[in-house]
Amino acid sequence: MNNNGEIYDLVILGGGPAGLSAGLYAMRAVLSTILVERATPGGQVAITKDVENYPGLDEITGLDLSDKLLQHAQSYGLEVIQDEAVSIDPGPDLHSVILGSGKILKAHAVIIATGGAPRKLGVPGESEFIGRGVSYCAKCDGFFFQDRVVTVVGGGDTAIEEALYLSKLASKVYLVHRRSGFRASKILQKRIHESSVELVLNSAVTQIYANEDGVHSIVVNELLTGEQRTIETEGVFIFVGLMPNNRIVPAGIILDSAGYAVTDEKCATRIPGIYIAGDLKTKFAKQIVVAAAEGCTAALAAADYIDQKKNIMGIFDTRSRVIKPQSVSPEDLRTGPQASITGDPTH
Ligand SMILES: Cc1cc2nc3c(=O)[nH]c(=O)nc-3n(C[C@H](O)[C@H](O)[C@H](O)COP(=O)(O)OP(=O)(O)OC[C@H]3O[C@@H](n4cnc5c(N)ncnc54)[C@H](O)[C@@H]3O)c2cc1C
Image 1 (cartoon, rainbow, N blue to C red):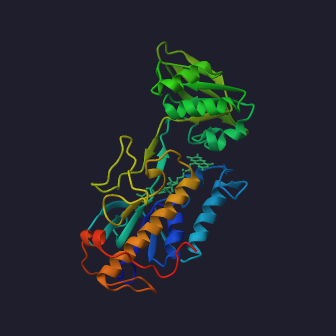
Image 2: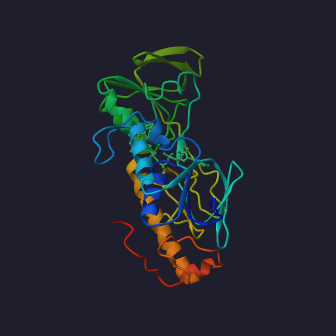
Image 3: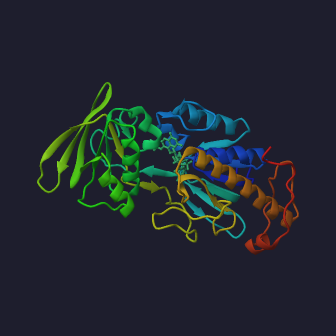
């Protein structure tokens, strides 16, 4: 409920590109909406130095893009609060979101856009030098390392794909992997062995060093012999996995083997009124433009769902959409008439 004790149409969890885009579209669809962000609005974009592949923006810093996404959604009146969603209690009628502050938000629909976080190596220098040589995204940051020496860390598909990608830009690529064999697919293994990438196997990065110009070297521990080796490198690209922020995803929603949520093309889950958008959702390309597009899809789908629900309840209010709760079953929503939306929320 909001401060007036009213029930929200929509609660959005996560203020990255998916959540903020969902907020923008929800406000334009005249849904009473609140967005909950536990840290800095912008999500992973806020820790990105420069973004050069968001269509329409030649070049923008991650912080500026984060600000623009937030301001755009807020210009339509989106309410944004800093708090952490700790659980979601799906109801047959209303869903409840329990926040770290103890507050409980009740809403007809919830969009979970809590994204993911790159798995860290946890070595000295890593966190300190993000954006100054340490990166978790070769397609985003590789351009800055043209004709320079870089090191990729990891042994899965992503690590190998990104090492191959970087080998077309960088003057030299090292690939450091803890084991003698790769987890990656056979075809990628074949390609990496045929490439110019120098493999540093059975080895683990133990330290990343930088000066005022950024990263200049790493220390690698040879795991079989215990020998230490210093590699001169200006970029360290770490691909040891992304961790989906799926802790609050309610039981009953399907997760794939890596923990990403499975939805239909409307970002709808198996629980009516609960949608998932952005990096938390299983997908091919984890990029800002994709997350924003899914935020849009989820918000429009939620608006459609809420309209149908209110039409079935017979209390559709085109001005505020804030209604008094009445009971409606998920079955009603599946079989009920198609709602007519007043105005086109996409325009
Ligand atoms: C270093 C780096 C550079 C990148 N560069 C680019 C690039 O140049 N171009 C590009 O297209 N993509 C880039 N990406 C990928 C891109 O940032 C992501 O695909 C995109 O941010 C995903 O958006 P999202 O909204 O789904 O999730 P996120 O950006 O992960 O946002 C999720 C938000 O949810 C919040 N949250 C999590 N749990 C909770 C909770 N329980 N309660 C409340 N809030 C919560 C988080 O704090 C976060 O703000 C980069 C990624 C990284 C890590």
